[in-house]
Length: 363
Image (cartoon, rainbow, N blue to C red; front, side):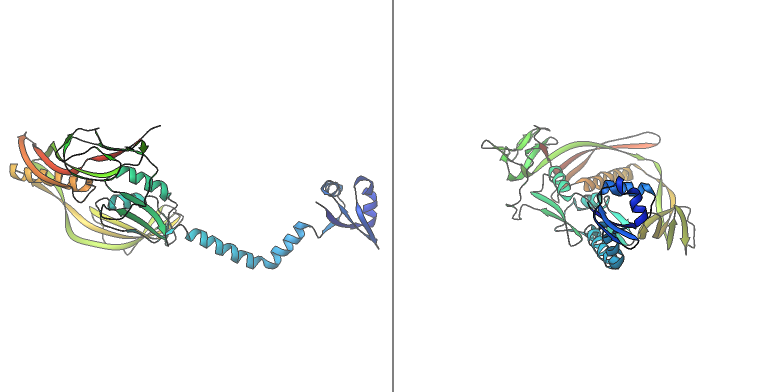
């Protein structure tokens, strides 16, 4: 690169034999000339005063100085547009299914708060692929972001999803023993029939079809039987709500908390927090609701122990089911044993549940 330089005439002639100058012009007591980078470094090291003229750096500096407000504005605009592309306003499902809550919680774990906004840089394609492998009971699941909304499309067997494709190939296998009740095969080779008994690990829908390999997808509902045991204390401490509650704001500054308008202090309470403002976890404002709780001692007899055990089993089943068609068909008390402190209740459970799980082919 060529640099245009202006120096004092006397200083120039003191070092002119050490540099390669060209296009030399002498005007009164000043000399104007051009040099390459190597000669410029010699001039710098000489200690003599000089000025750069029309260099790229000078032009850039002049441009920045003249248009810096415009540049800052443009930079700010592009920064806002870039950040906004990761902003999330809400999560929206196209249908109501038992797996919505689980998927929503997993998406929210990737959220980050900045000021009053929520952001996510989640890899939706990878996440969608993992969901399709985990929930083979649904023909297709897709998670994507559109207009700052995280959309979760879960398709049922009544939807037209022929155009949806998945490049992950494998089988759907039984995750437990059962007797087939009914099934839907979306893709793959069915090895199923009604009332067929299958064991855990058996292939239900094969990904091998006419010498081709596909992503097998299908819903397999079966009657399953299992034994479940629940222990219930004869005397147990139970937490109850008193009905008293309070709402207030909490400011967090450098990990130190300051409560605003908090009037009471409960010895035990349920605490619900919601962030309303967050600045890089340095300054944070939370809206807090506290609901007072107290403990009582409940004494259980044999009948109440059976009811409590049934409630626990039903609650756990509802929490873990992945399809609306799944249900407990029969919950039969098998036996009940007791010690001085505990009732042990055993049930035989008949369930209608989805037993298929996707198993990817390994190369």
